[in-house]
Amino acid sequence: MTDITPPPELVKSWVSDCLKSTFEEVFINIARWGADQQLELDAEWLDQNGLDRPHLQITPTGKALTEAMRSRPLGLSQGAMEALDELYDIAGVPLATVRRIRRAIERLRELEASA
Image (cartoon, rainbow, N blue to C red; front, side):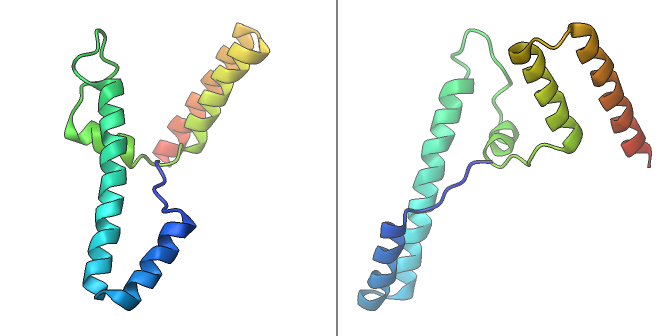
């Protein structure tokens, strides 16, 4: 998930703006800032996954964009699978060991789903 958090200086600026403007004006500016940040991230995502790529990683849709921008943290089994891939790629864990652990993780995932 992408974290859009304003820098402390900007927050202080908004607080001082509350003394000079109406709360409505300040809240509109805050919402506009957040929307601008999200738009920038959306544009970056589209550049990486857009239709002009020779080989699409995904089909760019509104749903895919939403999932990319508001993704959920990895589940335990998915995180374990990714860590396993890294162990194979980086640490050189033997492929047979990786396959055995992968089968165990997949079986645990099945058991979790049936519980």
